[in-house]
Image 1 (spheres, rainbow, N blue to C red):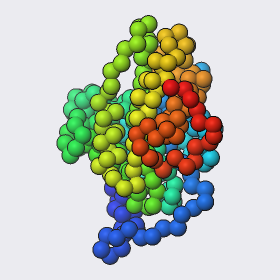
Image 2 (cartoon, rainbow, N blue to C red; image 1 turned 30 degrees about the vertical axis):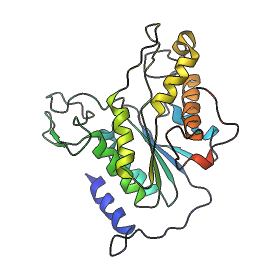
Image 3 (cartoon, helix red, strand yellow; image 1 turned 90 degrees about the horizontal axis):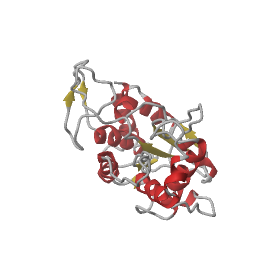
Image 4 (cartoon, helix red, strand yellow; image 1 turned 180 degrees about the vertical axis):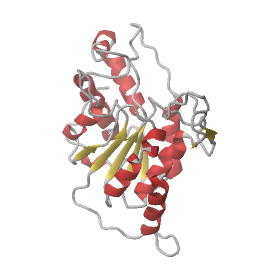
Length: 263
Protein backbone atom coordinates (compact mmCIF):
# COMPACT_ATOMS: atom_id res chain seq x y z
CA UNK A 1 0.00 0.00 0.00
CA UNK A 2 1.16 3.57 -0.69
CA UNK A 3 0.22 4.49 2.85
CA UNK A 4 3.12 2.84 4.63
CA UNK A 5 5.83 4.52 2.57
CA UNK A 6 4.29 7.92 3.11
CA UNK A 7 3.94 7.21 6.82
CA UNK A 8 7.66 6.41 7.02
CA UNK A 9 8.63 9.54 5.11
CA UNK A 10 6.43 11.69 7.34
CA UNK A 11 7.98 10.20 10.44
CA UNK A 12 11.51 10.83 9.15
CA UNK A 13 10.71 14.36 8.07
CA UNK A 14 9.29 15.24 11.48
CA UNK A 15 12.15 13.76 13.50
CA UNK A 16 15.78 14.64 14.08
CA UNK A 17 18.63 12.18 14.05
CA UNK A 18 17.62 10.86 17.45
CA UNK A 19 13.87 10.84 16.82
CA UNK A 20 13.30 14.27 18.43
CA UNK A 21 10.31 16.12 16.94
CA UNK A 22 11.30 19.08 14.80
CA UNK A 23 9.97 22.46 15.87
CA UNK A 24 7.24 23.59 13.49
CA UNK A 25 5.83 27.07 12.97
CA UNK A 26 2.23 27.45 14.06
CA UNK A 27 -0.18 28.85 11.47
CA UNK A 28 -2.69 31.62 12.07
CA UNK A 29 -5.52 29.80 10.34
CA UNK A 30 -5.22 26.01 10.33
CA UNK A 31 -7.43 23.85 8.13
CA UNK A 32 -9.69 21.09 9.43
CA UNK A 33 -9.75 17.89 7.37
CA UNK A 34 -12.49 15.31 7.82
CA UNK A 35 -12.01 11.57 7.24
CA UNK A 36 -15.07 9.38 7.55
CA UNK A 37 -18.00 7.61 5.91
CA UNK A 38 -21.40 8.65 4.53
CA UNK A 39 -22.62 9.90 7.93
CA UNK A 40 -19.96 12.61 7.63
CA UNK A 41 -19.74 12.96 3.85
CA UNK A 42 -21.55 15.18 1.37
CA UNK A 43 -24.30 12.97 -0.05
CA UNK A 44 -27.65 13.90 -1.60
CA UNK A 45 -31.15 12.66 -2.48
CA UNK A 46 -32.58 14.09 0.72
CA UNK A 47 -29.67 12.91 2.89
CA UNK A 48 -26.53 14.63 4.14
CA UNK A 49 -23.55 13.94 6.36
CA UNK A 50 -22.75 16.15 9.33
CA UNK A 51 -19.34 17.20 8.03
CA UNK A 52 -20.99 19.58 5.58
CA UNK A 53 -22.26 21.72 8.49
CA UNK A 54 -19.21 21.81 10.75
CA UNK A 55 -17.82 25.03 9.23
CA UNK A 56 -20.90 26.93 10.43
CA UNK A 57 -19.92 26.37 14.05
CA UNK A 58 -16.13 26.79 14.07
CA UNK A 59 -13.85 29.57 12.88
CA UNK A 60 -11.66 27.41 10.64
CA UNK A 61 -12.04 26.29 7.02
CA UNK A 62 -13.18 22.68 6.67
CA UNK A 63 -12.21 20.26 3.89
CA UNK A 64 -14.54 17.29 3.91
CA UNK A 65 -12.70 14.18 2.69
CA UNK A 66 -15.30 11.73 4.01
CA UNK A 67 -16.50 9.17 1.45
CA UNK A 68 -19.68 7.10 1.58
CA UNK A 69 -19.34 3.39 2.23
CA UNK A 70 -15.84 3.49 3.65
CA UNK A 71 -14.35 1.93 6.75
CA UNK A 72 -11.01 2.59 8.45
CA UNK A 73 -9.66 -0.33 6.41
CA UNK A 74 -10.98 0.62 2.97
CA UNK A 75 -10.16 4.31 3.52
CA UNK A 76 -6.58 3.25 4.23
CA UNK A 77 -6.28 0.76 1.38
CA UNK A 78 -7.64 3.24 -1.15
CA UNK A 79 -4.90 5.70 -0.17
CA UNK A 80 -7.31 8.27 1.22
CA UNK A 81 -5.47 8.75 4.50
CA UNK A 82 -2.30 9.13 2.44
CA UNK A 83 -3.98 11.86 0.39
CA UNK A 84 -4.77 13.80 3.55
CA UNK A 85 -1.24 13.19 4.82
CA UNK A 86 0.13 14.89 1.72
CA UNK A 87 -2.14 17.89 2.28
CA UNK A 88 -1.82 18.56 6.00
CA UNK A 89 0.57 21.16 7.33
CA UNK A 90 1.72 22.00 10.83
CA UNK A 91 -1.17 22.97 13.12
CA UNK A 92 -3.89 21.58 10.83
CA UNK A 93 -6.52 19.39 12.49
CA UNK A 94 -7.80 16.05 11.20
CA UNK A 95 -11.08 14.61 12.51
CA UNK A 96 -11.31 10.83 11.99
CA UNK A 97 -14.67 9.12 12.42
CA UNK A 98 -15.40 5.55 11.30
CA UNK A 99 -17.37 2.57 12.61
CA UNK A 100 -20.56 2.16 10.59
CA UNK A 101 -18.90 0.03 7.89
CA UNK A 102 -16.17 -1.62 9.95
CA UNK A 103 -18.05 -4.63 11.32
CA UNK A 104 -18.26 -8.13 9.89
CA UNK A 105 -15.57 -10.70 9.20
CA UNK A 106 -12.82 -10.22 6.60
CA UNK A 107 -12.08 -13.95 6.75
CA UNK A 108 -15.23 -14.77 4.82
CA UNK A 109 -15.00 -15.76 1.17
CA UNK A 110 -17.35 -12.87 0.50
CA UNK A 111 -15.11 -10.33 2.30
CA UNK A 112 -16.50 -6.92 1.34
CA UNK A 113 -13.17 -5.12 1.61
CA UNK A 114 -14.40 -3.02 4.53
CA UNK A 115 -14.53 -5.31 7.57
CA UNK A 116 -11.62 -4.86 9.97
CA UNK A 117 -9.95 -7.71 11.81
CA UNK A 118 -11.70 -8.11 15.19
CA UNK A 119 -9.80 -6.72 18.15
CA UNK A 120 -8.26 -3.43 19.20
CA UNK A 121 -4.56 -4.17 18.96
CA UNK A 122 -2.08 -5.95 16.73
CA UNK A 123 -4.37 -8.81 15.69
CA UNK A 124 -4.34 -9.67 12.00
CA UNK A 125 -6.66 -11.65 9.75
CA UNK A 126 -6.45 -12.97 6.23
CA UNK A 127 -9.03 -11.88 3.71
CA UNK A 128 -11.06 -14.90 2.68
CA UNK A 129 -11.49 -13.33 -0.74
CA UNK A 130 -8.06 -11.94 -1.66
CA UNK A 131 -5.65 -13.53 0.83
CA UNK A 132 -4.43 -10.07 1.88
CA UNK A 133 -3.56 -9.28 5.49
CA UNK A 134 -6.28 -7.34 7.29
CA UNK A 135 -5.57 -5.28 10.41
CA UNK A 136 -7.76 -3.96 13.22
CA UNK A 137 -9.75 -0.73 13.35
CA UNK A 138 -7.23 0.62 15.84
CA UNK A 139 -4.28 -0.29 13.66
CA UNK A 140 -5.66 1.70 10.73
CA UNK A 141 -6.81 4.72 12.74
CA UNK A 142 -3.71 4.93 14.90
CA UNK A 143 -1.30 4.59 11.96
CA UNK A 144 -3.10 7.40 10.14
CA UNK A 145 -3.21 9.60 13.24
CA UNK A 146 0.50 9.14 13.88
CA UNK A 147 1.33 10.08 10.30
CA UNK A 148 -0.57 13.36 10.71
CA UNK A 149 0.97 14.12 14.10
CA UNK A 150 4.41 13.49 12.61
CA UNK A 151 3.80 16.43 10.30
CA UNK A 152 2.82 18.72 13.16
CA UNK A 153 -0.95 18.35 12.71
CA UNK A 154 -3.38 17.49 15.52
CA UNK A 155 -5.93 14.68 15.41
CA UNK A 156 -9.41 14.35 16.89
CA UNK A 157 -10.62 10.75 16.90
CA UNK A 158 -14.41 10.89 17.00
CA UNK A 159 -16.69 7.95 17.76
CA UNK A 160 -19.27 7.03 15.13
CA UNK A 161 -22.73 8.53 15.20
CA UNK A 162 -25.55 6.31 16.48
CA UNK A 163 -28.28 4.91 14.29
CA UNK A 164 -31.85 6.04 15.00
CA UNK A 165 -32.24 5.14 18.67
CA UNK A 166 -36.00 5.79 18.52
CA UNK A 167 -36.63 3.58 15.47
CA UNK A 168 -38.97 1.23 17.37
CA UNK A 169 -40.76 4.07 19.14
CA UNK A 170 -38.83 3.28 22.30
CA UNK A 171 -35.38 4.64 23.09
CA UNK A 172 -33.02 1.67 22.59
CA UNK A 173 -29.42 2.36 23.54
CA UNK A 174 -26.51 0.05 22.81
CA UNK A 175 -22.91 1.18 22.33
CA UNK A 176 -21.03 -0.38 19.37
CA UNK A 177 -17.54 -1.68 20.10
CA UNK A 178 -16.03 0.87 17.73
CA UNK A 179 -16.88 3.65 20.18
CA UNK A 180 -14.50 2.14 22.71
CA UNK A 181 -12.00 1.41 19.97
CA UNK A 182 -11.99 5.09 18.93
CA UNK A 183 -11.35 6.22 22.50
CA UNK A 184 -8.51 3.71 22.81
CA UNK A 185 -7.00 4.86 19.51
CA UNK A 186 -6.69 8.44 20.73
CA UNK A 187 -5.16 7.26 24.00
CA UNK A 188 -2.68 4.99 22.22
CA UNK A 189 -1.50 7.78 19.90
CA UNK A 190 -1.02 10.10 22.86
CA UNK A 191 0.35 13.61 22.37
CA UNK A 192 -1.29 15.34 19.42
CA UNK A 193 -4.46 13.23 19.56
CA UNK A 194 -7.71 13.57 21.48
CA UNK A 195 -11.12 11.91 21.61
CA UNK A 196 -14.70 13.14 21.24
CA UNK A 197 -17.55 10.77 22.05
CA UNK A 198 -19.81 11.91 19.23
CA UNK A 199 -21.94 8.79 19.71
CA UNK A 200 -22.84 9.74 23.27
CA UNK A 201 -23.43 13.40 22.43
CA UNK A 202 -25.87 12.52 19.64
CA UNK A 203 -27.54 9.85 21.78
CA UNK A 204 -28.13 12.45 24.49
CA UNK A 205 -29.53 14.80 21.85
CA UNK A 206 -31.92 12.16 20.53
CA UNK A 207 -33.14 11.38 24.04
CA UNK A 208 -33.84 15.08 24.53
CA UNK A 209 -35.62 15.37 21.14
CA UNK A 210 -37.89 12.39 21.70
CA UNK A 211 -39.30 9.80 19.33
CA UNK A 212 -41.29 11.87 16.82
CA UNK A 213 -38.65 14.54 16.23
CA UNK A 214 -35.81 12.04 15.98
CA UNK A 215 -37.65 9.74 13.57
CA UNK A 216 -38.37 12.74 11.34
CA UNK A 217 -34.60 13.17 10.87
CA UNK A 218 -34.30 9.72 9.21
CA UNK A 219 -36.32 9.88 5.96
CA UNK A 220 -34.91 6.73 4.31
CA UNK A 221 -33.25 4.37 6.79
CA UNK A 222 -31.96 4.22 10.36
CA UNK A 223 -28.40 5.38 9.63
CA UNK A 224 -28.48 8.38 7.30
CA UNK A 225 -30.04 11.68 8.31
CA UNK A 226 -31.72 14.47 6.44
CA UNK A 227 -29.86 17.78 6.05
CA UNK A 228 -31.67 19.04 9.17
CA UNK A 229 -30.51 15.96 11.05
CA UNK A 230 -26.94 16.37 9.80
CA UNK A 231 -26.91 19.96 11.01
CA UNK A 232 -28.04 18.84 14.46
CA UNK A 233 -25.43 16.05 14.53
CA UNK A 234 -22.75 18.63 13.68
CA UNK A 235 -24.01 20.83 16.50
CA UNK A 236 -23.81 17.91 18.91
CA UNK A 237 -20.18 17.38 17.92
CA UNK A 238 -19.33 21.04 18.44
CA UNK A 239 -21.19 21.18 21.75
CA UNK A 240 -19.20 18.16 22.93
CA UNK A 241 -15.98 19.90 21.90
CA UNK A 242 -16.97 23.20 23.50
CA UNK A 243 -18.02 21.56 26.76
CA UNK A 244 -14.85 19.44 26.76
CA UNK A 245 -17.13 16.43 26.98
CA UNK A 246 -14.11 14.11 26.87
CA UNK A 247 -11.38 16.59 27.77
CA UNK A 248 -9.55 19.15 25.69
CA UNK A 249 -9.14 18.90 21.92
CA UNK A 250 -7.32 20.85 19.23
CA UNK A 251 -10.66 22.38 18.21
CA UNK A 252 -11.46 23.95 21.60
CA UNK A 253 -10.35 27.50 20.81
CA UNK A 254 -12.03 27.57 17.40
CA UNK A 255 -15.66 27.02 18.44
CA UNK A 256 -17.94 29.93 17.62
CA UNK A 257 -20.10 31.62 20.22
CA UNK A 258 -22.83 30.96 21.21
CA UNK A 259 -22.07 27.28 21.71
CA UNK A 260 -24.80 24.96 20.36
CA UNK A 261 -27.02 23.50 23.07
CA UNK A 262 -28.68 20.44 21.55
CA UNK A 263 -28.12 17.84 24.28
